[in-house]
Amino acid sequence: MTEIFRKNKILLFLGLILPLSVSAQVVNIEGEWSTKDIIGYSNVFEYSLMKEKQPSEGRSITFSLDGTFSCGEPMICPNGCSVYTSGSYRMVDNDHIQMIVQNVRFVGFYCGNLRTQKENNSKDLGVFYIYKEGDAVRLIPSSGNLQEDRDRMLYTQMLNSFGKEWRSYDYVWDNTNADQSEEIVRSCKDKKGQINLSNYKIVFSKDESYGNVFLLRENENYHYVVYNAVSKKVSLAYPK
Picture: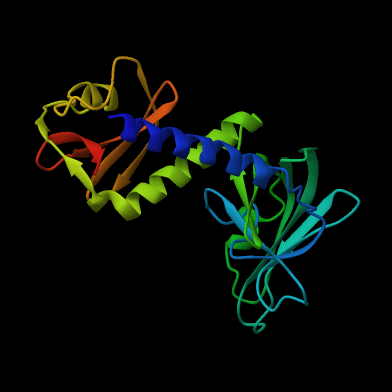
């Protein structure tokens, strides 16, 4: 039991320090970046940017010093349809950016109704958390609360790590008819007497191929609960 708590406390300590050190690396957003998605046009949850070291041959976005941005894709042939967006941005602080799309343009002979339906639409994209990940930058929708952003990234990293190692844990399954998160976790009992669940909080969850994973925080410790919706069984994940 002591060893389990020790491992979880170390994980918490490292997890809290890592986001702080990453966030301390202030990102200079100005300049040209390559992007997989057209900013403000593609229906995606977040954007991933890579700093350009030479002129882009694919989709790119440029943040200018005057607080404007332009995003687009190269025209491969005039018979196609290329999309361009532009607008304004402001740095809310070192970790957050707000973007407003003020113009959407379509260039090409076969843009069809896209031009009349989407062109010149103004849209406030809201605030994004600027998260540096290696050589890339992720723009993640945010409420503007830095601590919440850091916690969310920490929890995401923890569940991603668990997803790679879940087979290395022990499980003791309980049957349950619950279908809501809180009810499912309450159905889970510590049958090994190793984990205290008297004062936990569900801080994050994720759906995986092997089941739904809930990340619980118990004071300074973290625990994982796995729920199999097919067999209607739930278990704590016990470190071996």
